[in-house]
Length: 348
Image (cartoon, rainbow, N blue to C red; front, top):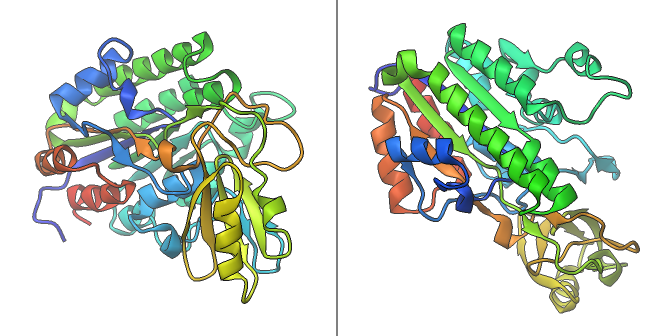
């Protein structure tokens, strides 16, 4: 158990925001928060696969993909099929905090994240199925960031000890429109206002607060709409699941050497490395995306090595902030850093 006094922890994820946007001109509230605390100068380091599911799982467990099991947004199921909804296999920060008697809350504009991190057991878990249905039929995949922000601020005001939030707007905008489109700039401005509103809501107990603002990955514009055909290159050698500009690869028995040789020779593939004892990750050259037959239609993507840099900002008055600030200034922090930091602040 930590020797620090028990504090309040708020972790806010700005999905797909690159660390280059921690900038006074483009996101003044976020930049001001970094000035009050600290920001990693070149950003933090997301997982590879640099996608929403695996990176949130790492953030809230503090362990690598090979331990928590969410290797990508979709994984190979034990029955030989595809599991489109993988979930962490180890306790999360939310689980540990609740077991330690702390009041927990999670609110996410992407409801799938609650599944990924087993968040439905939190004292406050938003959205519920009823909440999602209120936004129309068919039910939307994502909910408005403004509604998520209202839930987070309500959790602050009701005295929850651990509050986790995820805002989706930038990720949706970059996929549809690209990094510097007017729609994406508007989404970033809205996120920045939410950071300001949440900071203001935390002011009354700032001295007891650890406030962490991160992103799960950044994004890059698609420069070449011809898909990188890794599955075709590895036909007969491995199973392949595309995840944007990364891909999960499961070599067939005895085929590892051939898979490695064939993958790195494929047009548009930048590299491969192991994830665990059964799976590899392959990633694209910057600006390329994995696919099969059809032209890539998204404007921007993520998953590969060049989308690993992520926002890493810490602020607040709790003693743990000073220690974390030294760490993020010294070297780019992994997403794995934040669960242990938060656990210490919560004295669990």
